[in-house]
Image 1 (tube, rainbow, N blue to C red):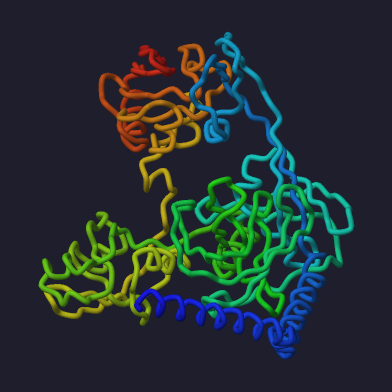
Image 2 (image 1 turned 180 degrees about the vertical axis):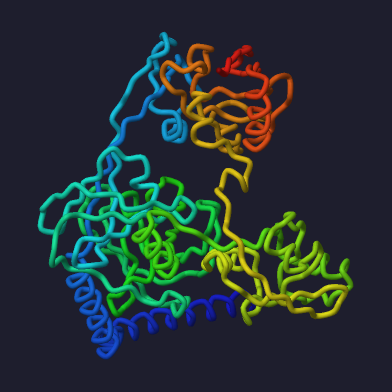
Length: 486
């Protein structure tokens, strides 16, 4: 009986499935069609994008920056570094057996974007596009080409101002990027991979990002496609006004990933000073600080939900010291506004000019105190970071970068410490001593160096002595290189 019952139920279920399928196939396809109002809205949005692109594109330019790079190149047989990461830092390699070092002066051309912001030819682009360039060529939407003058560059914010000798040019209006909200639609226009005036759309994914690409950062993150060659191009709102300058991408291939743009308000601040004086002066408190955490707050006998930044150190004779700020003070307000994150706080200070008077509210021993600070002038970055000045790097004959996990994996330096040689100047003492790109410097004058800061300090001491004895590893071989300073 149980078997018969099962067969009957199974037979009934089959009829039910067939009936359901027949019912589905008899439903008119129009029932699955999109709502006409939705389609109309999408078409309207498409027309809006098209209108913005049509009006903005003539003010977007293509850039070609030419420079000459002098490098010591070493070629390897059976090199284990089989990807583009090594090539990006140290130049192309050959599968041939190691040959003598080649000292070449090679022309390098970088392609990027920029945008016109005044009818008389002033433009904004990225500093990394034009800094050190021998020649910058601008191509307008109509195909006309001009040699641009570099008015000023700001490596700290990665902003540059250039100009061409032309009049009555189309230009873009600059919006207030502080009013930009997460979720807003934005358009990016540029010359990715050399494809002129490419337009992509997306939304603002986040604001206030810091990703270690520049000294002063407050990036707009967007999912609008930004590829190589977009650097320096505009990020536009739905009014067709510039809200940001496209500057970087994060992605596995370098062409597909998360896009970042410099807020246009930061560009405005730099533009005014670069146009007038060729450089940017920024306010400076003279403190080192970090975000306060619940653990730090508890250690300072503050509420664990306290927001702000805690002062780690006050530089002697700085604006902060003169005003009375102390270590372990927690800054909770700056210019009447709450302080949330250290990166945002740094940007707010840097957006002000030296000698500006500001009110700073701190918590000290649990009590609220207010100080008036007259900002100082932000020192050069090499003074702040301990980096070597440009003339010292030139005398040294090579530059180095930190040994990151990616570099260690690609160069075979897993488990090692030191700094990696990025570029070697032809004919320099370093070149004569056998130093090549990709080499790992482990010691300077028998002093271990684990990062660029330690290396720079060691080199400064070595220059006083007159010689630097470097312990270097190239592939699996350790060598000693002696550099003499005059």
